[in-house]
Image (cartoon, rainbow, N blue to C red; front, side, top):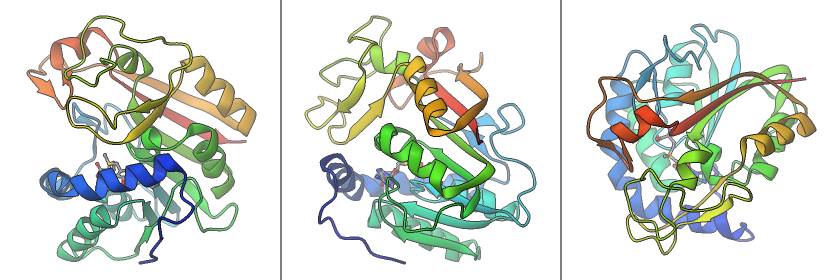
Length: 264
Ligand SMILES: C[S@@+](CC[C@H](N)C(=O)[O-])C[C@H]1O[C@@H](n2cnc3c(N)ncnc32)[C@H](O)[C@@H]1O
């Protein structure tokens, strides 16, 4: 594993490293369950890949990168589909879980890299497929990580990412109280940087999000075409609260977005 120091990290990357190193133990059990799954599921409602096909069935001969791999289960799903996988994460503690689970599942050919997904130490056009599920997708500055993902992909390569829908962030309490509610709590225009370091519930970390039109403008400016855009609704059978989102809220409003982009 390549180690990365905190020297010269942007402030949000340094804070997010502190946050994820501190909280990694809470993500061990969910990570173990996801590594055990034979089929991928997506997001907080566990939508099966056959309903939300973000991952191709066959990645044989492809080189894939996960940007903010956390406990590494998406990388494992890609490896099982035949890809050679490069998995980068900002948290050494999260990577420790990922490496342990890879050994226990006897999965090889995943490179686990400690580093910042906004600045990946790989040459241009190194990958056929890039993915982020709640990694760079929400914790990195889009104006930096989207161009970086574009640089890393070969022409025709695909970037898939899933994270919070901007509407959910507009309805998130400004003081960080959970769960999300049905009222507009902050402006949609100018969402940008969402600082949770003083949040009432689960404090720590700095996220990013944008208006849908700003995401689309960024993709076009950088050189991505949008293949598909998904606004994720909780299944009719969903109950209770998943993380910070009540099922009844997410049946009415999109709590998550997923983008499938193709490099021109
Ligand atoms: C919720 S996890 C998502 C990963 C995976 N889907 C999982 O649940 O284990 C968020 C991950 O993003 C990582 N992350 C945050 N900022 C990052 C950055 N700048 N570069 C790489 N990884 C980052 C965190 O360290 C954390 O492991």
